[in-house]
Each structure stands twice: as C-alpha cells, then as structure tokens.
Image (cartoon, rainbow, N blue to C red; front, top):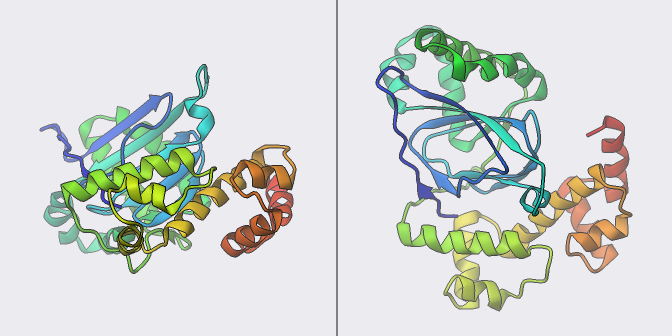
Length: 291
C-alpha cells in the first residue's frame, strides 16, 4: 500500500518526541515518516497495519517501526458507532536517524540497541513479558524533563533490545516505493475495503475504485502488498472473527456470517489456514486465557 508522508517537528530542547494521545478512536491515516517510532497501546482494540502485515491489537501492544515503514492503527467497528463511550489511547515515541548516527552508533555499549534498530525495518512487536518491563517507563516518558526523558528512552531501548522472542511484522519480500498518486489510489482501496470487507466485494467494484481494469488491479495489488486481494480481505475477516470468538457469545456459525462468510465450511477452512486452529479450538483456548 502506498502511504502518505508525515512531517514531524521537533522541539529545539529535545532530540525526540514523546507524546500521549487520547481520543474517541485512532485517526492517523496510512502514512510513513523518516523517524523511528515506538507505539504503546494504553487503551483500545482493532487492527494494526504495518507494511504488508495485518494483525489485531489490544491494550499492551508495543511495536517499534523503522524509518519510512508505512503504518496505521484502525480501531474496531464499535469505536466508530454513534454514542460510543469507548476511547483509544497510546504513547508514541518518535526519534530521528540523526540521534542514531550522532550518538547511538558511536557508543559500543549500545550495539544491542543498534541490532534492534536494524530489525525495525520490518517492524518489531515485543513480547508481553518485555512490554511489562517498560510499561511504566513509557507512561512516564512524556511528562519527564529533557535530560531524564533521554536517559529513560535509552533505558527503554536497552530493555527492548534484550527481548528473546520479538515478532517481525513485515515480510522479507516487502518493498516500499513512494509516489503521491499511488498513495491516493491505495488510500481509496484501503478505505473502501475496511468499510465493506464483511460484504461480498466484486473484483470489478474494487478495480473501479482504483481506476483500473480488473486484471491490472490484481497485478497492482499483489505487487504492492505481496498478497492477492482475496487474501487481504480474508485476513481482515479472520482478524475480526478472532475478536468475536474471544469477546462475544455468538455461535461459530453466527461469527462466520458476521465476518462475511456465508458458508460455514469455507469459514472453518479459511480460519484454520490462517490461524492453525479451528474457530472452536481458538475460542476455547482464548476464553480460558481471558483474552
């Protein structure tokens, strides 16, 4: 997908940004920026888009993104309903390449941090255990004075660099090319799909949204996302199903219908292909965890 460029402004008294956001829902568009970004979800649920990765997020999700890696967080549908009392909250830390080149790269003691930053070109999701170690530090970071903020950031990065089980998000095949016209085209595709993925989306319809013929759209989408459009839509459906299986009392058949699967057998097949378990197995495991 082709994101839009976000230009960040840094205060002269600080070498990086550390901010806490609270709103009805996350509203940043599909975008990228040259700065590295560390995002901690304080409150909220939905789907996280990083390059060609689409995964659910919830409270406690912590991700480090490398320079120019496109991303956005989309809340669950209930956040956008009229009269919703839900809110989304995050701590976002952004720091430039200059901080790395001028300081971190010159200090041998930070070699583990440098290794982590090299991994962040794919996006890194940290384990729950490691996230718990830095949670309080991240929550305090935006309120600290400049010197303490900097030292605390180094402490956070050092702890994160010791995570033994991080998850890389983007596929090795993902490649980014930046073009304003393609940014707008992919924005239209993404917005339409997120609004209608629970319905049947004819190929001709989404191709028209992209102002392409159906064959040209298929080539275009696969080249830029490393997925076919059907695979992309199915991933959205399955992520929605995971949430419903965990948080609702709907039957398996009802979950399938709610996610746009009108054939129960097809729902089972697609779910197991993506998750490695049947919908019922997934529900039993995650209900026990209280997730």
